[in-house]
Length: 346
Length: 168
Image 1: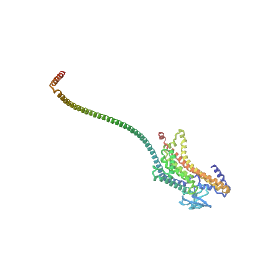
Image 2: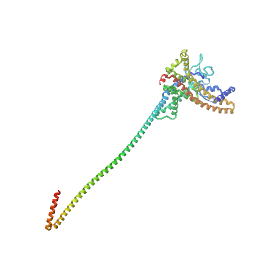
Image 3: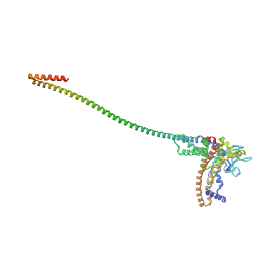
Image 4: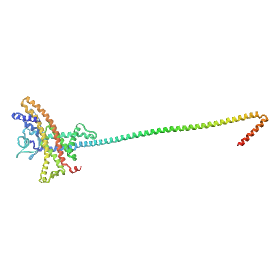
């Protein structure tokens, strides 16, 4: 892995010297960033991409819905255009107004939103397909095989190995959310690794998505926390001078926010880094194109081998990050649902 | 678009999409599965318990059966012994009965023999007496053919009679 990194880093220098080389920045960020259209491939310099609906609300002219194809190649449509070289709001839709360029309310179906919709549809269909077996059979008499068996194994693994031990006796109430979170992250991670349309969108490596995931866990923890949980935050069992200042409550309150923050950053950074690594390894093929056929083919073979290795590693990471997110969420929820008095009595 | 600033549009859609996914899966997805698996687990536990119960019952049955077998064997031995005793008794009874019957028959035979003998003796005696009388008649006729001889005989007879009186 380190060798792959070194090779890709060394080779990153190449395009600087030769201006005709492909744009590494464009290549990397084009893949991992959100966009208004879904770029599939480029054949002979011609971009093939799926235009997606742009939904914007201007303060002066109200709602506008149109295809992102209207904004391609720097075109302007109904006063809206994509800001390509600005410092702030780079690559985002802006509106020309009399008061200068302003950012409208933008809820466009971007590449990530479209990917999110597709992946969610896949997830819902897969789970409902797997669960259909239970409606047709008496699960007390027989156990499912095939896909339903796989789904049952995964669901019961998450429930029995993560949710039940981490939360304790209230686990049934949180189990649907945590299972949904696990499979949502898992499916999005997996489809993110698929290199071609309709996979490949960097969804769980996007801060907005992981922010919302962390937010849901934050809400699950703090909305349903019990008396003991809040007492531990505002009046923990420490010497009084630590509470009078109030040092400990401050630390505890910060902790309330750092927990979901860590969830957000961990998932985001892991998946983004995974995508970057794979892209970096694959880019070796293109970066070495100018070094001659022998060098290029030799390094391409190495790049492909490393690419295979990275993809397999990312499969592991896809599962692992879903597992970790679910486990830490369960632990945080479990901490908010402690019953120390009753547990002592039991 | 910046890498680390969350985009409002995506936040909005993420909330909406995750909300819908959560609603569908939490209502029609996972609880169906987990509930079924829970039921199956309960059933498996129940079945294991039942199996254990049956095993115990089987063990007790085997014990009972062995006991019954033992009892049957004892009963059989007892009956055999009783039957043997009965047999012996019957044989003994039969023997005694036969003996008594034989004794009775023997006794009867004896009495009838003795009676026969008696009557035979009586007949013989009568015959002898008749013969004696006839002989005596003949002899007397022969001897008492003279007067002297008749006298002498009378005297002798009187003597004997008187002797007999004195003896008496």
